Amino acid sequence: MPSPKESEITISIEFESAQVEGVLSRILSPRTVESIVEALPFTSRTFLWKEEVYFEIPVSVGPEKPRSIVTPGTLAYWPPSKAFCVFYGDSQPYSPVNVIGRLISPPDPVRRVKRGEWVTVRLKR
Image 1 (cartoon, helix red, strand yellow):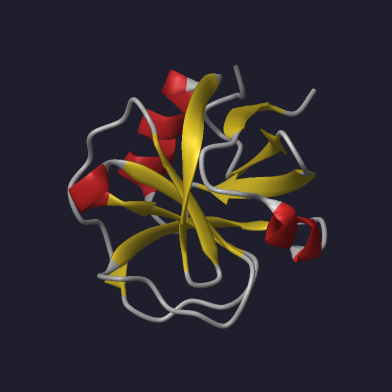
Image 2 (cartoon, one colour):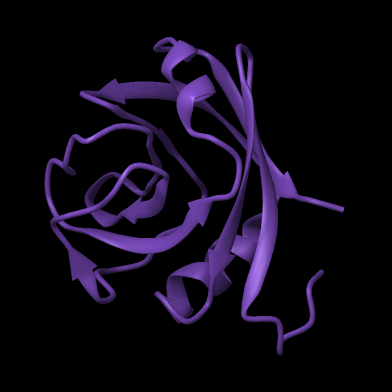
């Protein structure tokens, strides 16, 4: 478990067809990030929306500094669906999201992910 003082937590996002690394930033959405870190690791099935992969996670948090505009590589939490979102292209969220971090590896491998793939998110050691 990361120390409470760490503002960034490195994670691994492992899809069946791709693997990427990212950082969760407590500065962006502190309550949301803390809830996600406490729930790690978790496994889910993917859904697709334009140039975004998202999946339900065992976290329930309301809006926190919600944003309607994101950039490629953004990691976010979508409160209405309790979903973790990975934006790999120029598309925008369906509705406002809590931005929680960013990819630190190139987002291009996420383009290969198909609907229904298993995904596991865990702390990077």
